[in-house]
Length: 249
Image (cartoon, helix red, strand yellow):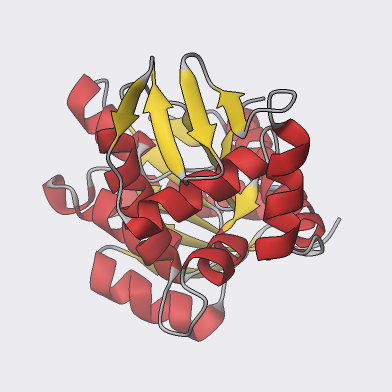
C-alpha cells in the first residue's frame, strides 16, 4: 500500500498523540502535527500532504472551519474533520466547506482508517472525473448547438428544472411564466448549465465561458453561483464537490 502523507491539526495534545500512533500503525506517514491554523498553513505549503485531519473546534472557536475554507479555496487536498460536536449550527457551517469525511471523538482506529481511505478514493475519483469534464470543449458554438437540440419542437425555448424556461432567442429566463431578472454573467452561467443539463460544469469551463479573459478564479464562480441561487425561486443548482456545478436533467 502506498504510504500516504498526513498532517494532523489538533490542539488537544493527547488526541493528537493518539491519532499519530493509530495512523502510524495503519501505515500512514505523519509529516506534521499542528495545534493552530497559521502553523498548519505553513506546513501545508511546505509538505503538500495527501490528507489533512482538522479539529473542527480548533482553539475553541471556528479556526478549524476557517482553515478548511482556506484549503478548499487554495489547495487541491482532501481534508477530514475531527469533531465531538453535535451542534447543528456548527455542523451546518462545516458542511459548507465540503469535507471528505468526519471522525467523531473518541475515534475508533478502524473507522479512522476507513474514513481516510474513503476520502482518498473520493478525491482520486473526483480528479479523474474532473479531467474527463475538461476534455470536452465549451464555447459559444457548442453551447448554442446543445441548447438548440434541447428546444421545444419549433419554439426557441428550453424547459428545465420544475417550472423554468430559457428563451434562447432572447436569452431570458422564466419561472412559471414570470421573468427572472439576471445580470449578464448570471445569465451566461445559467445558460451554460442548461446547455449541459445532467452534466457537471467544471470551474475552469465556467470561467472560460463566462469571463473569457484572465483574472477570474474559482471564488469568482462560487460567488456568481451564490448570487444566481439567491435570485432563482427554487434551488436547482447542485454542487459537484471540488469540481463545479450542475442542474439535474
